[in-house]
Image 1 (tube, one colour):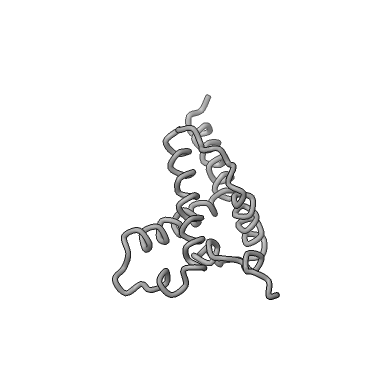
Image 2: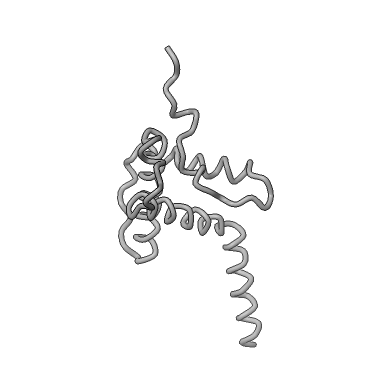
Length: 122
């Protein structure tokens, strides 16, 4: 077997994986940014203070995503997915990936509250 051919096959498989799942790298980047902002804070960052109802759920979603990411990366057992929001979180990502413009990347709005979560006026 030609080693160069095997190398090319592996490169093609990696490229295919990146084309299908590469968006998760963007999600991880944004989740890490939110986690760092809210856990280690920037002195002038008032998002959580001024809009806790928006940014607290976003922070929890980011932490949940990072927990799953780290456990998967380290080959650890994933936590049971009993949190009812996991399906919603996945639906947000799937929806946004299909509706986002070409060339636009994932940003923190992917973790923010959605209109479906806002209480309806009485």
